[in-house]
Length: 210
Length: 112
View 1 (cartoon, rainbow over the protein chains, first blue to last red):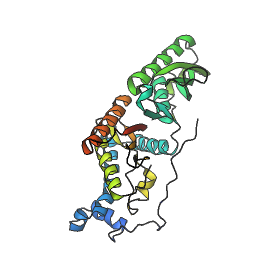
View 2: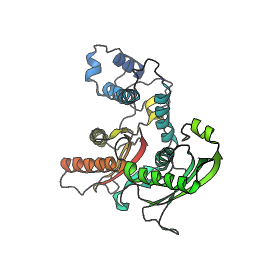
View 3: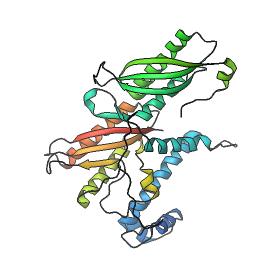
View 4: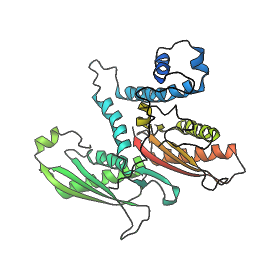
């Protein structure tokens, strides 16, 4: 995997708080916004409005994820929501390299870690399968780069499963996810069974995508 | 991905592009730039929203626009990326019809 990261962030060195160009502290602006303080400055100042816009975005995203996660259940478990938010953070820090989406000339890309996660999840829709390493290589043969991608996926398989059929089902799920969910052109899907798991353990396993 | 801009007008244009991108169906949000968000970049003038980078290498030539987005899982990723590209191209064409077509690159940095 290529380590490809954005330039380091360069936060201003003003301690934990920041003074906005209008003279207000960022913390006060955020606090006033959250308290819904009736303050004309907050409504009219472009610096304060921009400051709360980012916070508003983040809150909207979290609210959307909460709605999808059904937070109305009596025994609401915050773990899935937390995991999804942390997924976004993690992928931002370690995105991998960009891989082509759609046709080669379209200049559309998906980050390697994002695609690999989706394909591992697809593999794990086959009962008892746990996905491991998922490498995405340039397709097109020796040194070629035709905009296609080769998938090399390691899996743990149930010990009592016929492996050729199981591998074929996993391959089919991966192809389908790449095409229908992502829109990536896949040249090949190589499945490698790296371990056999007793059936009872395979039944208990949750998704292993990390 | 935050980018300093030479003029406030460029930063405003990037913010406008960010707004239209976020309106595209299937887009969850622009790459959030969470590190920046936690330590706000707002006090630095001329800084674009995370997720939008606009440059014009030839001075007065076409814009090169790079968009980083997080996409909703329920949508087909490539279709959303195409929607973002087309929307940005249309928007910039509306603002300056006489200019050369912008080169728009879309990178999907997350699925939620």
